Image (cartoon, rainbow over the protein chains, first blue to last red):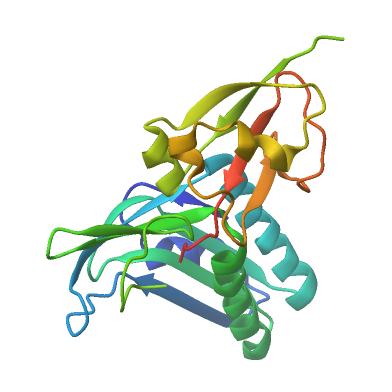
Length: 145
Length: 84
């Protein structure tokens, strides 16, 4: 199960999606908006996706996790504004044993970050905002990557 | 063979904001390479040209920039991603 969501993410949903009575290892990852109060305080990150291709890419990553690790992988990514402390991405993997579950979970988040056509616009407490897409104006030091 | 074709260009993130629209229709010569759509964008959207790491999709599939465009194609300009 993979996809984009406009509503808050629940870890239970991705964990339930990978449940398998033959799988004894379950690993999960949540990525949340970071405040970075010591650099330039962030209030929220707004995520935008290319929905058709993001859905296809997340689904492809799950398929790769199945063939590489024998794992079931679920990935949900939020779109729209995500306030500090709330998760923007939820990943869960299950496999027969823990090594494959950890590896598949890691694979899921790493490949998503590298490949999925999703972008963040960081909104700062000082009123500024910056797209992290290689084309917007430079966000300045300390911008999240 | 027509001397122009019309393609739709999907824009995201800062490109979308610059354009003030999430898609543009462009008239280009037939068989224009996918990656050459940059030169047909309005100057305000094009900026200094494609940034390092840009990728392209044609009709919702990743496609190399040399692929020739056909009438009615949907192009997406995929800037370096930052999800997660």
